Amino acid sequence: MTNRTNTNLAKLDLAKPDLADLKRLIARHAPADGIHDTAIPALSLIRSSAISDPVHTLYEPSLCIVAAGRKRARIGSREIVYEAGDCLVVGIDLPIIGAVIEASPDDPYLCLKLGLDRGMLADLLLETSAAGRTPHVPDGMEAAGIQAATRDLVDASARLVGLLDTPQHISVLGPLVVREIHYRLITGPQGAILRQIASGESRLAQVGRAVAYLCENYAAPFRIEDLARIAGMSPSSFHAHFRMATAMSPLQFRTRLRMHEARRLMVAEGLTAAEAGFRVGYDSPSQFSRDHVRIYNRPPRRDLSRMQSEQAY
Image (cartoon, rainbow, N blue to C red):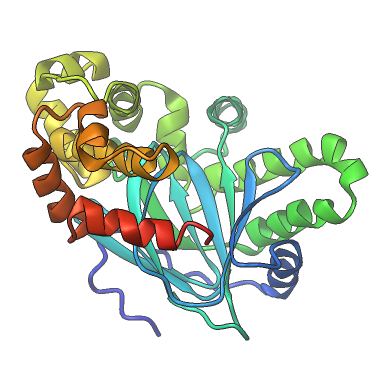
């Protein structure tokens, strides 16, 4: 049993379903290490045959189901570990640091990731509310949660990946299975996160509007009062709910967005650290370097060398 005393994200310990079919399908359609896009929109498959260094990624609202192996993720000050049979539900854009911590060539880490559709969630919220099937949504909560995947969720996910074997059916059946997965999520143990996002005026949805603004304007200065106005809250209430949702302050959140984009610019466009720092909003190369070391534990030049050596992966 994994020791999860360091996590602040609640996991419901439900009986885990049979993962054999899902594991087999992911392994077949992700034959090599890396992230594999698929013919099904918003669905990607992930494979790793070895443990990995921490990878900094900006997650959009998504579902991740682990079919084999184990991964550690850090969201702000929170740390979580999830393994085969677990799923991670992310409700708003979040900078996440993830590392595969259990994998081998004979038993690789296998995971599916499905981007979530806010419009579909909103439609399903209306339908389930009208039918009296949606439980009460607590106001104010974390923007990501981990749970043991239910049998229905795993079965639907396996059927979705299985459609890759019959691509002629994807355009008709794919949207139906994706909608079923959204339904299983919004009515399941971690559905409260998604019901808050779908409701539009919940605290988490309000924080989500401020997050969307920061994602689009990370290079520009901001005032807490401006973000609070976008969210429709008082500054003090906004700061408290933002930290609850993301485990970060708005300034820390923006710093991680800037660093994520700066690293991309250095690798993809060949910019120097100083050039990338200016592009993402830093006035001082030394401040950019200090923040980089604080977040990644290495200076930009050494970090760039490591990223370039791993770019193929």
